Image (cartoon, rainbow over all chains, first blue to last red; front, side, top):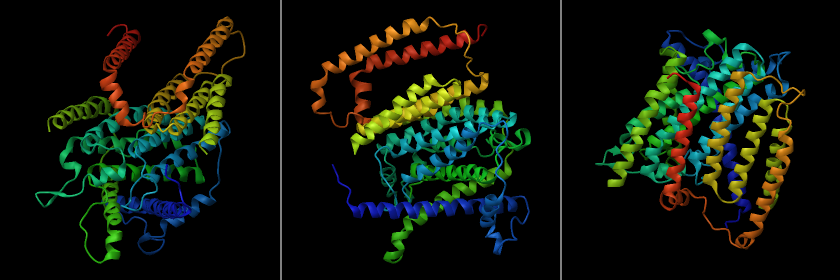
Length: 336
Length: 163
């Protein structure tokens, strides 16, 4: 058994502070990215009053959330109503504890890291479900019920889509998953799993969007029919916590997609020593950002699915595709 | 350290399990069940069965219990009334049956005490579980999956009499 020295302890503490601080700052600025990109797609200027290019907008939003009145509806269940945003945010932030942001920037590389993330995110749905139920109001309840049905349906195809990758990489540890994709084919094609598992990648991306309740799958929120879905009754910081959890989940699924299919932190290395140390993290963040950008583009261009279409798409398209992918992959892995 | 954690989470698991029965509202019972299942997952981790722990959370706490809460909300079950219970007589059968079950558990544990000395390492690793499921116990495993499939088809037929 390995004993933990005080040096290890301090090192882990530093990593936690760096990752937590970085992630929280990134989450705040993702709201700015989303508003700015969406505005550009819709030919609007977007936020441009607070600071240069509206760069201080997230700070202004945060302050505004702080000073808003915190309303708890009269007929709500106070205990669950307060617990729900916490139940939503804590799992969303917990998954960052196993994500490798670089070869040395990972809090803990546990042997079942991938399953840990799936386990933690599967608990995140309770925040939405209980928040909708505890509000004791029509629209939140409908949003919560849609959300639980949607999560169950898409979690299946999300989990099954990565099985092919796991069979190729032969590990569940996220750092080892990244390392298994190092190197190149024929000298120029990076050895990323996306080229081996294109179907799995498509299934993963579709289910990931549904899992994070984003357009075109944001049936739980759908402001045109359900006002605001499960968070209709929430205000002030509790609402901000729900939003933070949503953005954190977006980053988590994008990070997982990067680790599983796009080679994680791997990328061209150049420059002096100090630059090389930071490059892996830069590539990793850049790949995550590509996914986020894609998310925002989707949100601003594609209309929402109908509820029955959503269910049909999950069960009749994505799930069979994921299963067929497992079948073919296991056949090829067994032969070679 | 491990002992302290064990007793802490064992207490949480037992407390939550009792709370499942004590709560009047079905949703609170379901939530207590989630806490209980997660606490048991922590016990799995303490036994070095990380894989089992994660599967426990994914399957039970994260999937089955979501379905439970979904059904509870769908039916919008009222608060359990304190009035006449139709299943009153179950108490008189339940207590002896529970005692009998406790006796069985204690008797079994009594007999395997010699195994306690050396816990087999890595019994809960993905490789070990895959080996026992797909090589050592392949036939029982497949038979169980067939059984679940039969239950599934049966439930569908019950729910939709005219397909």
